[in-house]
Length: 261
Image 1: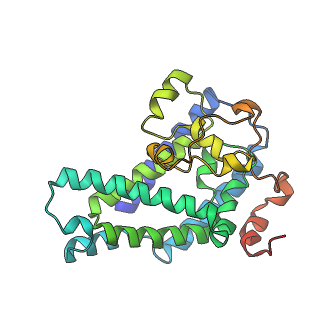
Image 2: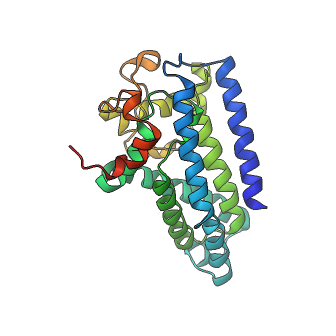
Protein backbone atom coordinates (compact mmCIF):
# COMPACT_ATOMS: atom_id res chain seq x y z
CA UNK A 1 0.00 0.00 0.00
CA UNK A 2 2.85 2.36 0.89
CA UNK A 3 4.50 1.74 -2.50
CA UNK A 4 1.21 2.35 -4.33
CA UNK A 5 0.65 5.64 -2.51
CA UNK A 6 4.15 6.83 -3.35
CA UNK A 7 3.78 5.79 -6.99
CA UNK A 8 0.43 7.62 -7.27
CA UNK A 9 1.92 10.83 -5.88
CA UNK A 10 4.97 10.47 -8.13
CA UNK A 11 2.86 10.06 -11.27
CA UNK A 12 0.65 12.99 -10.23
CA UNK A 13 3.61 15.34 -9.75
CA UNK A 14 5.19 14.10 -12.99
CA UNK A 15 2.04 14.90 -14.98
CA UNK A 16 1.71 18.35 -13.38
CA UNK A 17 5.32 19.17 -14.29
CA UNK A 18 4.87 17.92 -17.87
CA UNK A 19 1.81 20.13 -18.32
CA UNK A 20 3.59 23.11 -16.73
CA UNK A 21 6.50 22.61 -19.13
CA UNK A 22 4.16 22.59 -22.10
CA UNK A 23 2.38 25.81 -21.14
CA UNK A 24 5.28 27.76 -19.59
CA UNK A 25 8.68 26.42 -20.69
CA UNK A 26 11.89 28.06 -19.48
CA UNK A 27 13.96 26.99 -22.50
CA UNK A 28 13.27 25.70 -25.98
CA UNK A 29 13.75 21.93 -26.07
CA UNK A 30 16.33 21.28 -28.78
CA UNK A 31 16.47 17.49 -28.74
CA UNK A 32 13.51 15.32 -29.77
CA UNK A 33 11.42 14.38 -26.74
CA UNK A 34 10.76 11.01 -28.32
CA UNK A 35 14.47 10.20 -28.43
CA UNK A 36 15.23 11.42 -24.93
CA UNK A 37 12.07 10.26 -23.22
CA UNK A 38 12.45 6.74 -24.62
CA UNK A 39 15.83 6.40 -22.92
CA UNK A 40 14.78 8.18 -19.72
CA UNK A 41 11.61 6.18 -19.16
CA UNK A 42 13.33 2.93 -20.14
CA UNK A 43 16.04 3.52 -17.51
CA UNK A 44 13.38 4.33 -14.93
CA UNK A 45 11.40 1.20 -15.75
CA UNK A 46 14.49 -1.00 -15.53
CA UNK A 47 15.34 0.57 -12.16
CA UNK A 48 11.82 -0.09 -10.88
CA UNK A 49 11.99 -3.72 -12.01
CA UNK A 50 15.40 -4.24 -10.41
CA UNK A 51 14.22 -2.74 -7.13
CA UNK A 52 10.97 -4.73 -7.21
CA UNK A 53 12.80 -8.06 -7.39
CA UNK A 54 15.47 -7.06 -4.86
CA UNK A 55 15.16 -4.40 -2.12
CA UNK A 56 12.18 -2.20 -3.02
CA UNK A 57 10.93 -1.97 0.61
CA UNK A 58 14.34 -1.84 2.24
CA UNK A 59 14.01 1.76 3.49
CA UNK A 60 10.75 1.10 5.35
CA UNK A 61 12.13 -2.21 6.62
CA UNK A 62 15.20 -0.42 8.01
CA UNK A 63 13.01 2.23 9.67
CA UNK A 64 10.86 -0.46 11.30
CA UNK A 65 13.98 -2.22 12.61
CA UNK A 66 15.44 1.03 13.92
CA UNK A 67 12.17 1.84 15.71
CA UNK A 68 11.60 -1.62 17.15
CA UNK A 69 15.19 -2.17 18.27
CA UNK A 70 15.81 1.46 19.28
CA UNK A 71 18.75 1.77 16.93
CA UNK A 72 20.21 5.05 15.74
CA UNK A 73 21.12 8.46 17.10
CA UNK A 74 17.56 9.74 17.47
CA UNK A 75 16.67 6.76 19.63
CA UNK A 76 19.42 7.58 22.12
CA UNK A 77 17.52 10.61 23.41
CA UNK A 78 13.85 11.27 24.05
CA UNK A 79 12.61 14.02 21.76
CA UNK A 80 9.08 15.21 20.95
CA UNK A 81 7.80 13.32 17.92
CA UNK A 82 7.57 16.42 15.72
CA UNK A 83 11.12 17.51 16.50
CA UNK A 84 12.41 14.02 15.82
CA UNK A 85 10.46 13.98 12.55
CA UNK A 86 11.90 17.32 11.36
CA UNK A 87 15.46 16.34 12.33
CA UNK A 88 15.03 13.06 10.45
CA UNK A 89 14.00 14.85 7.26
CA UNK A 90 16.88 17.34 7.52
CA UNK A 91 19.53 14.68 8.23
CA UNK A 92 18.31 12.41 5.45
CA UNK A 93 18.43 15.31 3.01
CA UNK A 94 21.97 16.13 4.15
CA UNK A 95 22.90 12.48 3.60
CA UNK A 96 21.57 12.62 0.03
CA UNK A 97 23.56 15.80 -0.60
CA UNK A 98 26.68 14.00 0.63
CA UNK A 99 25.98 11.00 -1.58
CA UNK A 100 25.46 13.23 -4.62
CA UNK A 101 28.70 15.09 -4.01
CA UNK A 102 30.57 11.81 -3.56
CA UNK A 103 29.11 10.56 -6.84
CA UNK A 104 30.97 13.38 -8.59
CA UNK A 105 34.20 12.96 -6.66
CA UNK A 106 34.70 9.18 -6.57
CA UNK A 107 35.45 7.73 -10.01
CA UNK A 108 33.69 4.39 -9.48
CA UNK A 109 30.50 6.22 -8.44
CA UNK A 110 30.85 8.79 -11.23
CA UNK A 111 30.91 6.00 -13.82
CA UNK A 112 27.32 5.26 -12.83
CA UNK A 113 26.15 8.77 -12.02
CA UNK A 114 27.33 10.34 -15.26
CA UNK A 115 24.48 8.51 -17.00
CA UNK A 116 22.21 11.09 -15.35
CA UNK A 117 24.32 13.90 -16.81
CA UNK A 118 24.40 12.61 -20.38
CA UNK A 119 20.89 13.90 -21.05
CA UNK A 120 21.30 16.46 -23.83
CA UNK A 121 18.37 18.56 -22.69
CA UNK A 122 16.79 19.34 -19.34
CA UNK A 123 13.20 18.58 -18.43
CA UNK A 124 11.21 16.65 -15.85
CA UNK A 125 12.22 13.27 -17.31
CA UNK A 126 15.87 14.05 -16.57
CA UNK A 127 14.91 13.41 -12.93
CA UNK A 128 14.34 9.71 -13.66
CA UNK A 129 17.43 9.19 -15.83
CA UNK A 130 19.62 7.03 -13.58
CA UNK A 131 21.46 3.78 -14.14
CA UNK A 132 19.62 0.93 -12.35
CA UNK A 133 22.76 -0.05 -10.46
CA UNK A 134 23.08 3.49 -9.10
CA UNK A 135 19.48 3.31 -7.87
CA UNK A 136 20.28 0.00 -6.13
CA UNK A 137 23.41 1.43 -4.48
CA UNK A 138 21.47 4.53 -3.44
CA UNK A 139 18.91 2.39 -1.63
CA UNK A 140 21.65 0.48 0.20
CA UNK A 141 23.20 3.78 1.26
CA UNK A 142 19.82 5.08 2.38
CA UNK A 143 19.23 1.97 4.51
CA UNK A 144 22.55 2.54 6.30
CA UNK A 145 21.68 6.20 6.92
CA UNK A 146 18.23 5.31 8.28
CA UNK A 147 19.74 2.82 10.72
CA UNK A 148 22.45 5.25 11.87
CA UNK A 149 20.07 8.18 12.30
CA UNK A 150 17.23 6.08 13.74
CA UNK A 151 14.48 7.32 11.42
CA UNK A 152 10.93 6.07 11.97
CA UNK A 153 8.79 4.66 9.10
CA UNK A 154 6.52 7.72 8.82
CA UNK A 155 9.49 10.06 8.38
CA UNK A 156 10.99 7.74 5.75
CA UNK A 157 7.70 7.63 3.84
CA UNK A 158 7.35 11.43 3.89
CA UNK A 159 11.00 11.96 3.00
CA UNK A 160 10.75 9.67 -0.03
CA UNK A 161 7.77 11.68 -1.29
CA UNK A 162 9.56 15.00 -0.67
CA UNK A 163 12.73 13.78 -2.39
CA UNK A 164 11.02 12.43 -5.52
CA UNK A 165 8.65 15.41 -5.79
CA UNK A 166 11.47 17.94 -5.40
CA UNK A 167 13.59 16.06 -7.96
CA UNK A 168 10.75 16.23 -10.49
CA UNK A 169 10.23 19.92 -9.70
CA UNK A 170 13.84 21.06 -9.88
CA UNK A 171 14.59 19.11 -13.05
CA UNK A 172 11.60 20.64 -14.81
CA UNK A 173 11.83 23.01 -17.76
CA UNK A 174 9.37 25.45 -16.19
CA UNK A 175 9.40 29.22 -16.16
CA UNK A 176 9.29 30.79 -12.71
CA UNK A 177 9.48 34.59 -12.28
CA UNK A 178 13.00 35.54 -11.23
CA UNK A 179 11.81 37.26 -8.06
CA UNK A 180 9.86 34.15 -7.04
CA UNK A 181 12.82 31.91 -7.88
CA UNK A 182 15.06 34.02 -5.68
CA UNK A 183 12.68 33.61 -2.74
CA UNK A 184 12.01 29.89 -3.25
CA UNK A 185 15.68 28.97 -3.49
CA UNK A 186 16.31 30.38 -0.03
CA UNK A 187 14.82 27.09 1.16
CA UNK A 188 14.27 24.76 -1.80
CA UNK A 189 16.28 23.91 -4.89
CA UNK A 190 14.64 25.52 -7.93
CA UNK A 191 14.89 24.43 -11.60
CA UNK A 192 17.12 27.42 -12.40
CA UNK A 193 19.41 26.51 -9.51
CA UNK A 194 19.66 22.85 -10.43
CA UNK A 195 19.97 23.46 -14.17
CA UNK A 196 23.42 24.92 -13.45
CA UNK A 197 24.40 21.46 -12.20
CA UNK A 198 23.58 20.01 -15.64
CA UNK A 199 25.83 22.45 -17.50
CA UNK A 200 28.50 20.99 -19.79
CA UNK A 201 31.04 23.28 -18.09
CA UNK A 202 32.74 21.07 -15.50
CA UNK A 203 32.99 23.67 -12.74
CA UNK A 204 29.22 24.10 -13.00
CA UNK A 205 28.57 20.36 -13.20
CA UNK A 206 30.45 20.09 -9.91
CA UNK A 207 28.13 22.50 -8.10
CA UNK A 208 24.57 22.79 -6.78
CA UNK A 209 24.32 19.19 -5.55
CA UNK A 210 21.19 19.71 -3.45
CA UNK A 211 18.01 17.86 -4.37
CA UNK A 212 15.53 19.35 -1.91
CA UNK A 213 16.93 21.79 0.67
CA UNK A 214 19.09 24.49 -0.91
CA UNK A 215 21.12 25.46 2.16
CA UNK A 216 23.68 22.64 1.86
CA UNK A 217 25.32 24.10 -1.24
CA UNK A 218 25.77 27.47 0.43
CA UNK A 219 26.94 25.87 3.67
CA UNK A 220 29.52 23.64 1.97
CA UNK A 221 30.66 26.14 -0.69
CA UNK A 222 29.27 24.29 -3.71
CA UNK A 223 26.74 26.95 -4.74
CA UNK A 224 26.75 28.74 -8.10
CA UNK A 225 23.97 31.27 -8.59
CA UNK A 226 23.76 31.41 -12.41
CA UNK A 227 25.38 29.60 -15.37
CA UNK A 228 28.14 31.38 -17.28
CA UNK A 229 26.30 31.13 -20.60
CA UNK A 230 22.87 32.01 -19.21
CA UNK A 231 19.95 29.60 -18.91
CA UNK A 232 18.76 29.98 -22.50
CA UNK A 233 22.08 29.49 -24.28
CA UNK A 234 23.87 27.12 -21.88
CA UNK A 235 24.91 23.69 -23.16
CA UNK A 236 23.34 20.80 -21.26
CA UNK A 237 25.05 17.47 -20.68
CA UNK A 238 28.68 16.38 -20.66
CA UNK A 239 31.22 17.78 -23.10
CA UNK A 240 32.33 14.30 -24.16
CA UNK A 241 28.77 13.07 -24.88
CA UNK A 242 27.06 15.67 -27.06
CA UNK A 243 25.44 13.46 -29.70
CA UNK A 244 22.31 11.31 -29.39
CA UNK A 245 23.98 8.28 -30.98
CA UNK A 246 26.42 8.25 -28.04
CA UNK A 247 23.67 8.06 -25.42
CA UNK A 248 21.20 5.43 -26.64
CA UNK A 249 19.65 3.20 -23.98
CA UNK A 250 21.93 0.28 -24.87
CA UNK A 251 25.07 2.41 -24.64
CA UNK A 252 23.93 4.06 -21.41
CA UNK A 253 23.51 0.69 -19.69
CA UNK A 254 27.01 -0.39 -20.72
CA UNK A 255 28.73 2.99 -20.32
CA UNK A 256 29.82 2.53 -16.66
CA UNK A 257 31.72 -0.62 -17.61
CA UNK A 258 33.66 0.89 -20.51
CA UNK A 259 37.29 1.68 -19.88
CA UNK A 260 37.79 5.42 -19.48
CA UNK A 261 39.91 7.09 -22.14
